[in-house]
Length: 97
Image 1 (cartoon, rainbow, N blue to C red):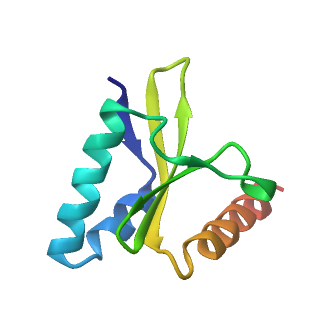
Image 2 (cartoon, rainbow, N blue to C red):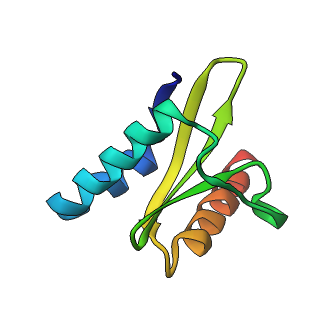
């Protein structure tokens, strides 16, 4: 079993979801806690991240094996979750420069 950590962005996105979707996401996160490799590995510019499907929503996360932690970076509808994550990562890189 691993510890789950949410970024402030992921926590904000989950808080904005309707109650029934929040419950769906919480249940999926509990499943990930038991089996962190359940999600599919992403490729290309999102290599290193994994994505778990939960109906029409996706949970984007990374597994930190050294710390036995699961870091959830983004949660959103399948239609735009990957584009939103890319934009978030680009903005994060721009702030570091």
